[in-house]
Image (tube, rainbow, N blue to C red; front, top):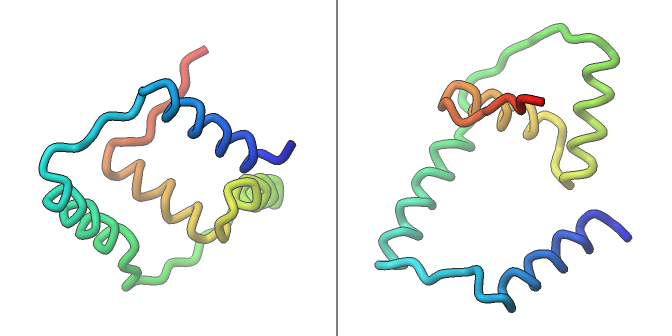
Length: 91
């Protein structure tokens, strides 16, 4: 089964089990999130970095699994890091 199929089934199951809750003032929340998304994905600078072939291949593989370009994945990871939202899993 493809990862996307599993995710879709998990989402449907959680919805059917009543795990989802309505958001108060939905329109305000949508506008807020749209503004955040626009700011997040505004790309006005270019950088060049050197990384190992192994790391690049791993990034490209993860991006393919997520269904996004690997450059977008890298930008997203960097953004989450500087925003303090990237957490390291502790074993």
